[in-house]
Amino acid sequence: MKVIEISTAGAPEVLRFAERARPELGKKEVLIKVAAFALNRADIMQRKGLYPPPTSDSDIPGLEVAGTIIEMGSAVAGHSIGDRVCALVNGGGYADECVAHADMLIPLPSNMEMTTAAAIPEAYMTAWQALHWLANLQKEEKVLIHAGASSVGLAATQLAKDARATVITTASDAKHTICQDAGADHCIDYQNESFAGVIKDKYGGVNVIIDFVGAGYLGDNVKSLSPDGRMVILGLMGGLTEELHLGHVLMKRLKIMGSTLRARSQDYKIRLCQDFWEHCGPLFATGALTPRVDRVLPWDQIVEAHHVMERNENAGKIVMTVG
Ligand SMILES: NC(=O)c1ccc[n+]([C@@H]2O[C@H](COP(=O)([O-])OP(=O)(O)OC[C@H]3O[C@@H](n4cnc5c(N)ncnc54)[C@H](OP(=O)(O)O)[C@@H]3O)[C@@H](O)[C@H]2O)c1
Image (cartoon, rainbow, N blue to C red; front, side, top):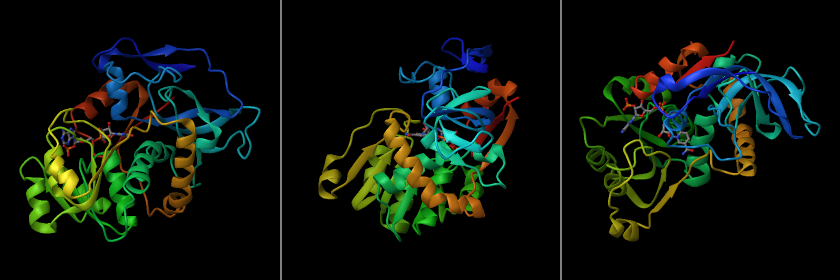
């Protein structure tokens, strides 16, 4: 099969096409003929040698694909050859064929394009997990979503609005309309305004924060949380370190959590996928939830696609078509 592999750690130019042997299928696995895959920040970190995949996973990057089932393991039930699906995968998505666990398959609504479907699994399952499983978001609560125009940020905004929360996002100025189109009630230009100042003056505090920035934001995040507030840290785009004001944590009874989806067990991912799709499948079918696809490129433009993401030019998913 044809893949895009990381020849050595480095800049986007280290990505190259290669031929690999078809992977062996486990009993509960299927082989997908990949029509499209989407990029993630994790792919960039992996390419740079900063986020090696778990040893049990493929070394080929790519965490989400959409395509057609072409082969099934002996214990797979409820799916058929030819089914159109998308899936969160344990690596190997940058390929024309990819293995997925059968219990992680999301059946595509008949009217959904492959390039739309490829943009769903990672962003929405991450956002669903953060808002509902970890932060236990409640109706009428206020949620601050950083990197509001990121793929995960936009998915979180749509899901939080569906849960009837008030959504405040941070994003660079040019991306505010995109955040508002996703449902954000208020968008803060984090490059020119203090988000903590806006939260304090306009809202008094927020119940939930979804953070992807880490250092530089930690102190202001803790200040911005209301009593019994919860914060989920999903990324560290701003770096690793900053002192934590423990007095706020103590006095406001804060809960600060972190999570990376890739490192979760297969069982956890299956439960998450099934819970997510049970609630959100009907909303995708009617179009009430729609991933924002920033651009679709042929997969031979993978080097340019990585550069676009590293320059923060995208707002939503970069999707690559295969073939
Ligand atoms: N923990 C998990 O399970 C999990 C799963 C998936 C993704 N993630 C993380 O989620 C984050 C977003 O991923 P994505 O694929 O959705 O990204 P994306 O679509 O590429 O968007 C990232 C956006 O974040 C903003 N940004 C970048 N650096 C920033 C900084 N230092 N401070 C503030 N904003 C910054 C930029 O928008 P502006 O122009 O607005 O600055 C950028 O376009 C990443 O950190 C990724 O690693 C975590």
